Length: 220
Image (cartoon, rainbow, N blue to C red; front, side, top):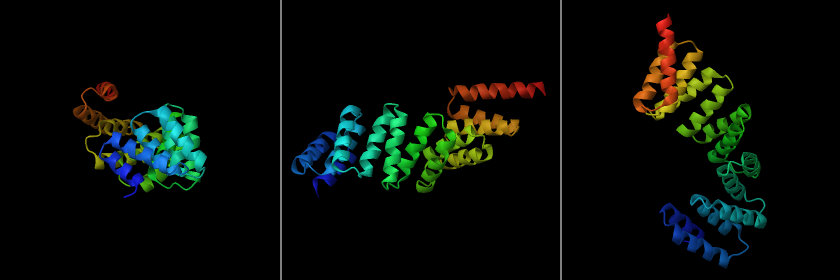
């Protein structure tokens, strides 16, 4: 097993100190190979050492400007620092260079979502869903952006699929309750808010939604 793969295995085993040693050895032996820097960057990002991770990713890009995974890693560094515009550019660069994985499309969608560009986020969440079938996190965020762009029926469909995967997803119950309100289905909205509170009793938004629906029912 070469040192890069050995380091990756050590990371998976949560043995970060040994992984760092192995990646460092790989860099010393192959100082012009971008992979050592990129994987060390991945380790540092995982350890939330964002400043050093950025340096390693940039070194990887310097050695190989077409290293899509380095641009993806750098995007994650910027995202963690809430530098969403920079993250957006890095994720887009990774995609342009051929990275065809659900995670990069999902993260690019999140950068647009965090900049309140909900419509721009939609095609990336859609692609992420296609590449990450059955991922409740992707489906949920996709549903939120659909709801924000007033595509209520489609949003409801995504939240329903989240609940098929995870029947204890309180935020999905809350948001599907909101879609029922838009459809003027007060009874099902109340059921959804109540279910969210059964799962998470301190869900303030669901509690507020339930209170408003009960007021509406009392006024009828």
